[in-house]
View 1 (cartoon, rainbow, N blue to C red):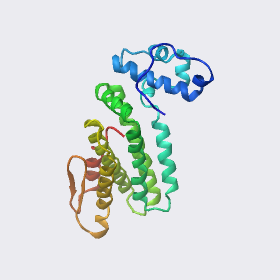
View 2: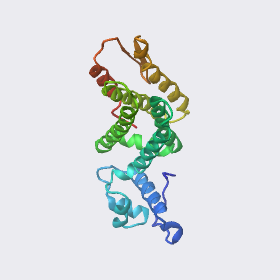
View 3: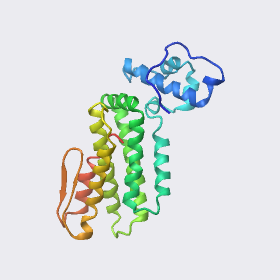
View 4: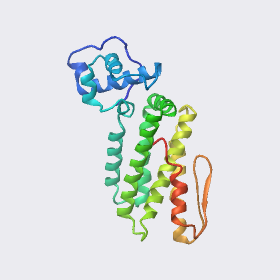
Length: 243
């Protein structure tokens, strides 16, 4: 797991303690962030990152397929943890289970605050990293939508897409707010409140009332009879970065 942005620029020590796979992987991640803090992403090479970590180029590619992957080293593992949490909560209401699962993503950002802030700064400057972030967001949204489709009895499957988009938008709004302000406060109570609004949004149709949801920047309001495609487009527009 990511631990530090500070890297000794001399070649790393050898021996069992520092050649275990997890230790090598950590050294590569730390080296990448240290190198990228000093230089431009496009001009930084895999060779430079590997050298700073005290390993070979070949070793780098044993752990990461691309230079972009080293900036997002734990997304796959976190997504697997989220999927396992969803499976564990099959007895909970479906949307509540998704809201609980997405909270694990924010927990990881908070646990690795310095890396989260450094990555946020990089993704704001580097198009390739921003594109990778968008791809990660869409993978979470697909995971949540599939879970909701499988568990919800609503006759229109696009409702699951709307619910998933709302959860992701709520998470990303809180995460972005926290990152922009330097990660100084605990964002988890804020996320709990926002996700409560998301759940309330989808209680509305069952009561036949108007629906609204507060997010990190404002309010979305939908009148009865609004086409589902319009609601989906509005919510999805909020989910293109961060998660």
